[in-house]
Image (cartoon, rainbow, N blue to C red; front, side, top):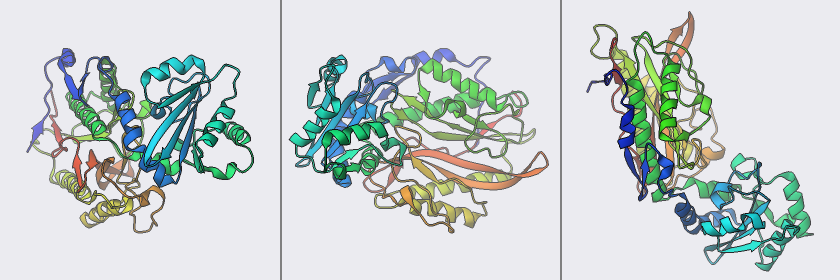
Length: 449
């Protein structure tokens, strides 16, 4: 099927945004003012503690978990434990007993009322202004008989929120014999964050739909010979501001619009888009300040007299699409990240693609590059390690690419161009499914408007 994007009149229909209303997780996300709708995060956050944290603590061998939050240098997981608005130093303790998690918030008086209002925790302990937080934490751990206490100290940034000074204070308060009972929360954190509840997948599905809609709007603005990659990026930035959504990753590199040779993760440049270009847009949004999308859409700019891309471009595209579909078939519970990546690489080699330096995919959710198994490590000359060895489970959401890479010449030098069909998929009990229908055909842009 050939699909040609046509300019919708002299002006993009910006008033259309007032009519776009997306159903999200039982509430409404209005595209004009998304944060005006009820935020599903508080209820989902409670459900994640109740339904997912017990198994994560068991996997880490921890019967207690301590998270310390504070103003200006907060723990990366503050949003997940209710400490995102911490002023004075506060502690959030989780205890595992008989397969259930109970929680205690130890907080200064200034935050106590707000914390009670959100209703996330089972108990609250308000400290007097001159009270010692660490003594209160130590007493709570002793009272509940904690034997293996997870703390956020790790080589992984998401599980490394406890500062060196804070750890020394905690160890001093606990006294002799306790440092050996402190364990890294790394396994707990990665296990807990990797799985998304169905309610979260529903929110991410709608975020993906909105992301794709904006990508098609952006391609409709391209005037070959005039529009630059940076112009397209600016258009998308403007639409994000209108809709009240955030960036899924570094703002200067979101979106990455590239009509030239491969640039990897980078900013959009002043390159003018011309007939014969294959255009890549890598774009993601952040909704409710919590969940990310990450999609790529590709277009081809027709030359004069062309009704379709040249045969070689069509072949590259179809090979990338087929690689993506093969990965989807391999993305199932019990598989490991490197095994899924290997399926892609073997397909690319068989179709004559150049190898690429990037992994096939990554978890997506609270960050564009989230916690969980990485779909990488399948190179024939590499021994899989780290997150490539993690086992895929139901509820995990991935953004991943279907690749085809070929050699080109750029400014008299050898270079490469890669089609990297990127979609989002959720792992089910028996396999995986796309969050939204995947791109099947290149978007075709006429040579003149």
